[in-house]
Length: 304
Image (cartoon, rainbow, N blue to C red; front, side):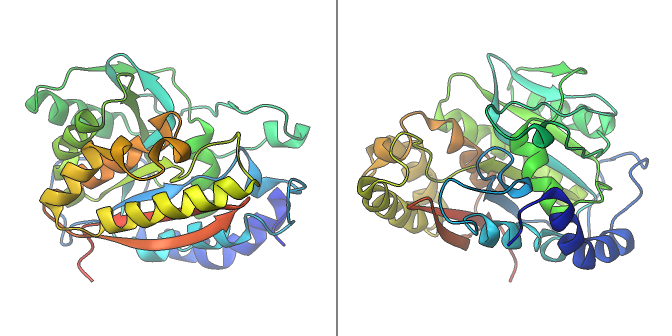
């Protein structure tokens, strides 16, 4: 089982190091609005529970997070054309949408009660001020107000899953906040504004959890409610885009919606990734049961 930071790095290196070194650009190259040979999909992924991939897990089976970690390690091969990553994490909300602009963002250990070594993790992915500026430009064109934050670090919704996926930390990475209104339609619109980045080699990642009700995990109600909501979510994400957006905008009316998400911040990154795919199809790419609840990942705009 993947239990410790060293073990995960060893397992990841066989795939990640060679693939990233061969296929991804140098982190110092600026992002410019050029057209890529292939439009990148967008992805909504589960980021786990705190630093779960880098510790000995004792709350439930020892292999609780192994399948999710294995899925995250497939990202370099799944998206070989990516030259930078834009992450919308469930763990950053601002009254005005805010872009991280620092060249070397630190890590924010915004979790509590975990082993001491998990507060010493490192992941030194560079920021990309040029990409941050491009994000603000696109938001401005869509009349979406924005701000910038040069001090903001990567929260665990960013560095925990991406440390698994890209342990070498070569890809420039920029984080974008949620809008604190938590309005689903606003986040769909936010995604639509960002869509041109997909033609510029930028992988748009929504980082959350498709089920996020910590109070009921490992209870029978969590399994039932998560299965009901997960089935609705899959049907919705795989629906034709006009219907997909209407359903996502009204997500709280879905079966077991508030049982799955008493507060919607972990679902809203999905809205951004769906919106950025515009009229393109969505599909389920990962599903698992974690701590008694169904959890899924979705991809939008894939060509095959």
